[in-house]
Image (cartoon, rainbow, N blue to C red; front, side, top):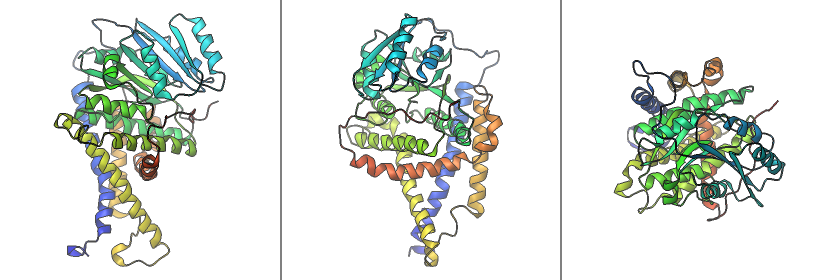
Length: 423
């Protein structure tokens, strides 16, 4: 028994409860600073995309796999883009549905649209890399085939790109558009209170864990420098973000680059998505957790991102241990030092509930300029930060052994995900 009668379980319980609290306040402070420094409108400043000194060609890449039902809507939206110099490159990655015919029809209607067909499913990373090599454009806007891009999103992302030649990528601001179900509404809270806050906070201390795979703009020279996207990574967006930043390229967050996305509205679809994300994160950590990569002094600006991720993985297993002690205690009389009366009670419950409420309020205030709808769903969203941590814990503890046992250099192919309840 440790000194002062404090057991190991007490340390695990304290860490499990208070680490999410600490991170929530860290994200809120960091995001608020980011807003004050970069987003706040100055006196006399008007809302609108920045005027650019030049408009270089941008290739909008849309990788597709069994996207027949929704890709037409995506491309029609892309054709309303207000950026004056762009082309659209659609990649049919071995689709088994009518995607090929749909893409050919779209290409025949507008000269800005081109199509690449793969005979077999090669994976999103290969689709993106092939498209990057098939265009003369130096800038690549990569969009998922179920996303609706705001007409001015490319203007905003290119505004960041042209600031400095060291900017390798700009990640946009995904917004949930399917809000008819409870699961859709609470995920709206995630993209505001979790994703938005994290990216703002991480940008404040210099490095971002990952670009948003659904909407991001890349400089092709930077991608060429790091070997483009890795075909064996389950989450090619996390991997390319780490590769770029470890080579001292910069990644920016542009909250004005809006992209309206579909999210899973079944628990099975949500679980598959989060498990893949978690496995991808573990894969990237295993790949770069070596002296010649992350532990070089030149890579020190990535250390806060690494430390945050390692602690979050540790927290997941600590929370699992606490939950197991609580569950066993329901059936077996445990010694007093190893009893967990409740997973959420007393002062801890009050603090977590208050923090969830505050986190949602701060995030909605920061995002109110970009999305007028979320306040209507505030009631459904206030507990999502707590649900996010529980989902993160379950996905992480499941993903780690799965990622470790996954065969090295195995091609990461994809299937069409759950995109919610469609009318």
